[in-house]
Length: 208
Image (cartoon, rainbow, N blue to C red; front, side, top):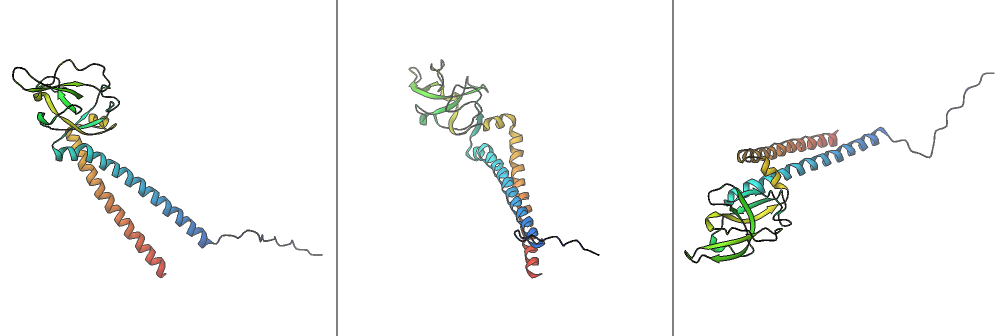
């Protein structure tokens, strides 16, 4: 007697995905990954652009100078590594409470950033001078600060960005601004071309 094996039973509880459904799922995953990658790239590029703007372009446009806080004398207001952007101010406009950056001695390159705690006038020449103190220091600075020593008052500050300012020279900061600008242009072009290609593919898929 000839017998045949019974045909395997086809499960009826679970639907088998069609090739078209699987392809649509893969397409959706690719789109999600593409969006995430694009967002990450834009975040990096825009963050770099923001750094260049606040550390290079804005100070240059305003005639200000960026400095890096190296010690903890102004903690917690400006801890070490803070970038302080100092804008020139007239001595007559400075008052108690202002944070100024000044040369230790007139003509020296070393500067200090401390807060004005008193303003006085010389008894001989009548010229104003300032007494300063670091926010974290207990005592007022020993030497008074003459107007000729003052580079300016702190305009704004950015935590941690001073480390980058210390690593880059003036020329390197300028080239960094050019590089970020070029990167933004190139990335915008790449995204524009990619978007154009995606639109063409969708049109072809709709007409096929």
